[in-house]
Each structure stands twice: as C-alpha cells, then as structure tokens.
Length: 493
Figure 1 (cartoon, rainbow, N blue to C red):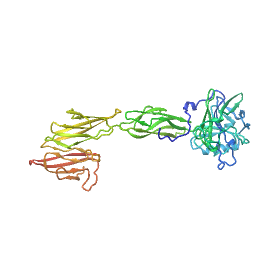
Figure 2: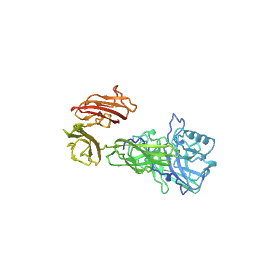
Figure 3: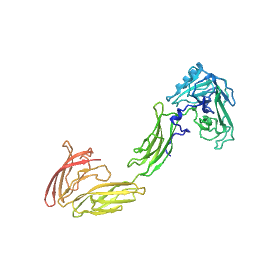
Figure 4: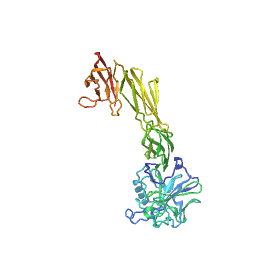
C-alpha cells in the first residue's frame, strides 16, 4: 500500500480489551527490557535504573507494602513513596503532551483495576524513556535506589551484526507477588528485537526492546520495539491493508487497527462513500467520475478528544469520457449531412443516437448522419471500456433552413474546443449586425459581419462574467429579406 508513514509495531486492541480487569490479583502486561540511557542526557544513570514493568491490578486494591518483585538476576529493594518519588512523578507529568497522567498510589494503595508502571529505581533519568504520547491514566511506582545493574537480560546478539536469525533460546523471567497471589512472566531474551524488528546491531539500535504478555490464561510473549518510549501503548491508528489501485466501477477494501487507548474510530477522505465509516474494516466506493490519486484516512479519537489519523493513497483508474465534435458546425437544408468524430480516450465501444426519439443509430468512433430537415436535434454518444464503465454526452446539432437563422441561447467559452464561441448561422445572409448588452444595458460586444463570432470578451479584451446577456440582431438575406430579432444568451465558463 502507498502513503503509510507509521512504522511502529502495533497491537490490535479494542476499547473493551483496554477496560478489562483481571480476575486474579494482578497480571503482568509488559516489560521494557532494554531501556534507553543517553550518557549526555542522563550522566551517571544506567540501564538498570531505568527499566520498567507495566502490570494491571485485579478486583482488589493492592498495598505497596505487600508487593514483592522477584528478578532473575537482581534483588528487590522495596517500593519508595516519598518526596523524591513525588518530584519524579511531577517531572514526568510535565513531559506529557497527550491527555494522560501519572499518579502515585494514594495512601500507598493501588486501586483495583488499575494499570501500573513500575520503574526500577528512584535514580532514574526522566528524559530517558518518554511518556510524551501518554493518553491514559497510569499509576507509577518506584523501586528504592541501589540496583544499578540490569534486572532483565538483553539479547546476546547486541553488539554484533544485524541478522534475521535469532540466537539459541535464553529464557528469563519476572514474578510479582502480593500475599499468596501473583503472576510470572517468562521471555526468551534472544527473541528481543532491535528497532528494525530483527536481531543484533549496536546497543542504541536495541534500545527499546520490549516484551508484551497476553492475559488471561497462559501468557503468550510477543517481542516489539517502540524505541525510547516508556512501556505504554501510545494511541496509534494504522491502515494495515488497503488496495493500491482500483478500476472504475470497483470498490476498495480497507482494514485499520489501533494500538493504545481510544474512544472511537472513523474513515474519511475522498469524494466517495465508506460502507462502514465507523468500523475497522470497510470498503470505499468512489464518487461518480472520481479518478487519480485519492487520499483516504483511518482515524482514532483519543480519550483527550484528539483525532489521530493514518493515510493511504488509492489510485482510481479513470473511466471513459464521452466527447465528440462535428462538421459543419451548423448544417443547412441544402447540405444536411453532418460528420461526427468521437474524441474520447480509454474507450472500446461507441454508440450514437441521432434525434430523440431516435431518427437513426451508428457505432464506431466516427459516424455521419443526414438530418431530415431544418431544426435542432439532440445527438447522443454513449461510450464504454473493457471494465464495463460507461459515459454519455448529449449535444444539440442544428440544421438551418434557407430563410431561417440559428441563434444559440447558450455558449461556454472555457477553451475546451466545444461551444466556445457565440455565432449566428443560416439564413444565407448578405449582412449581419448583432449588439450584445449586459443586464445593466451596457454594450459588451458587437458583431458587424457574417461569420463573425463572440468569444465572451469585451472589445478591450476583458472576459465578461458568467450570466445572462441580451442581444438585438439585424440581418439582410441575399435575397433582400431584412430580419430583425432579439433574445437572451447565457454565458457559462
């Protein structure tokens, strides 16, 4: 598909999943194994001070004093809640640009059904792993300072060449207990992925390696890398599948997905219609005549009311366009045969109808028809292509009698080569004088000889606006008959 700018790995979540509460005391949801630490931004801080775990509490509140973390390679030093943690929480909240918020557990108790981020040290660096895109309310707790080494094992291939082949399995685990209840999350360190979704590479290319765990039931680990972001799911809409090219008369299949917390989704863009505009999956039906590149958007509305969108570009192949010209512009009863030529592109079939009701039919890109007498006749061209798309065009062709004038009541001076000028035809004229006035009675054009035309400009070359104009006409036929006539002309560009 074309036009996708979002490249973060995504987890498809629904609003109901986000609101689910465990039936047991807690569930581990995510571990930021390979935390970001920049020596320039965070001097003196280490990865082991900045690792994070996200978990969700069950139907009962949990006292911080009852929480016990068991790491594979580090001792648990207890949870701190003091002036230092209050300052850290305030600094983190100041960095949030979404509508999310971090809270310390009130009175040292985490409410039931709450998502919690555990940070491995009060010596963390606030700038290291961003909370900028947070759109949810999370509780935050901190381990006492003292552990500077890593709590979680990174991939063995860090520092080696990037590869698509992981190293042999290397299992590690974390357990969180509260009273007689708890949860264990087990992961394969050598399945942790770098920012490319592969294995190996520099330390910086592996920063952000994260494990996510499903629940309820036996947890299933998935390995993602959100870069230097804290372990929460940012609200990110994405178009995961879409047709690139669409023939005329066809519809496009579209499928969206959203990570993080959101309240609703919708599709927008184009001039056509969506079969299910408020669903993840939908089809797009182009508007009549819509073609070329069309931008379509899948959007999610966050808890803040902000609308975030992902874009795809759909190329709609143009359908056939009926167009034709004829000679002479105005036939006469002495020569009533008119030659027609289609100028449509992308066309494989042509069907002509002369008069309505029909006086005759023809097929093919060109045709000739002899009209039965003076008057104006509708000529219809219907065209089609191999995809079954059609178009039609109706034009009026006039045949002048030997003693009659044909004065158009509309013309379109838009430069398309069709009906671009106003001209008086027929009557076997020896002389002609036509005056054209605007609605205020001002003279805007004069035609003083036969075959002269008006192109919609004043004598000074200024284009007159669209609208209705009035004309008076005086003409003399070759036989000496004098003709006087007046009427209106509609000009449309």
